[in-house]
Amino acid sequence: MTLTDATVRWFQDRRGIDRATLEAFGVQSEDEGVTLPYPDGAVKHRKTLEKVDGKHKMWFDPRTPDGRQRLFIPPNFSSVGKWKIVWEGESDTMACWQNAPDEAKPHIAGIGGAAAFGPKGLTDEAIQEYFGDAELVFFVMDNEDPYEGNEAYETVQRAKKQITQRLGRKARFVELPGSAQDGCEFWLAGFDWAAFRILLDDAKKVTYNFRAIDFSKERPVREWLVDGFLSKGEIAMFSGDGGSGKSLLLQDLAIHMITGKDEWLGMKLAGQKVMIIDQENPEDEVWERLFALGMTKESTDNLRYVWYQHVLLDDPDQVRKLYEDVANFGPDLLTLDSMSRMHLSNENANEEMNPLINDAIFPLARTLGTTVAMIHHVRKDGRTRGATAIRNAVDITYDVALTEDKKQQIVTPDKQRSITAWGHALYLTQRTDDEGKVRITTELEDLPL
Image 1 (cartoon, helix red, strand yellow):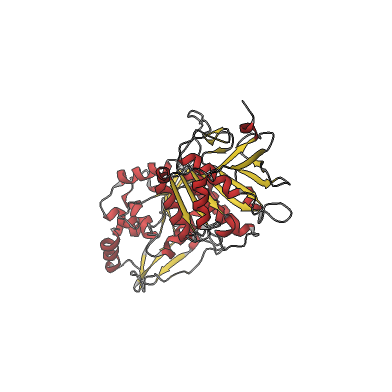
Image 2 (cartoon, rainbow, N blue to C red):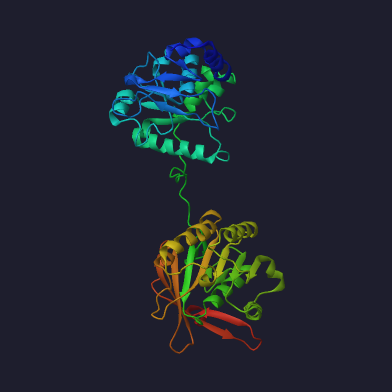
């Protein structure tokens, strides 16, 4: 076989690769396609130069003795050296070698496909042979668009994972400019080796996908929404039997906040805006309670009371809308009343509750910094209803119950992730004056001066 003029013209015009480079790599013409020699006598056949139906038909004959893949390498390749550059595809490899300075040529190689580091790809012995001395191995994969041809994009992402698993920290991935889908297009676009070196330098930089805490900065001070009771940006759960006054308790807190009170139940307050998602209480009772607790027309600008809007925390579209509403209003406190009415999932299944809490509730607190108060019910035995994932996910839980004579409300801190225990429960008393105004007080507030 020989290298025909037609083959040379195609590679020159379409891939920017000249005859000297093709001959250096041992490329030969074969009918409408070419053959590409690999180490250990393996030969790769490409039936046609152009793709057919968007794909190349390729096969090895003969194969390597063990049937596993080898690198596609130039004649002067050396396994010695602290760095290597590996391209996806033979044409890209040849184009890079052609444009590289002489000192870089022995360190350039290629892989025949994205699966070269997969289960049927290079052996551990081959990886040690080719890359054992290298401190860094740069890989240049095709620049696949995740929105067009997702299958090709996913293949490249899978290849990157396989490469990292085999080579560990020495693997680095070079990102081509968006205008170049592959290496040949990169060089044909007029980029030179100096430009490519910039891409290599960028690939050397250590980057992380997830932000870590910067412990070098000044230590943050805990911010309280309710001093010693609720921190800003935390998730609290108020659980108790029906009729124990959970909703009334948090409504009373809301009224103190929106009317600008400095304290609530003897504890200092910070924050003024409140948002309540209520799918539990009748509307007429909501109106009656809030004005009885002291809400004024002037204070309602600080309150966004969402009543029976069928908010579902396990519906991604609803979760997105809730996040947008909370972000737009910017409440210091968000009350969810009650959890059981805000999802259609199996409340007893951890695998269904975990994503609900992680995707719907955590971003409201951790990202937006809103204190989230979840109202939840208990079972007949007094334990929190539903999967353990619900209780485990929150920062603090308060058990709400009535005394045996029903005259007082007991609020007991249970699980505490972020604050120290009070050492006792809060005993609250509800009083209504002749004008129908309601006041909730603690025992300490009731003591005479």
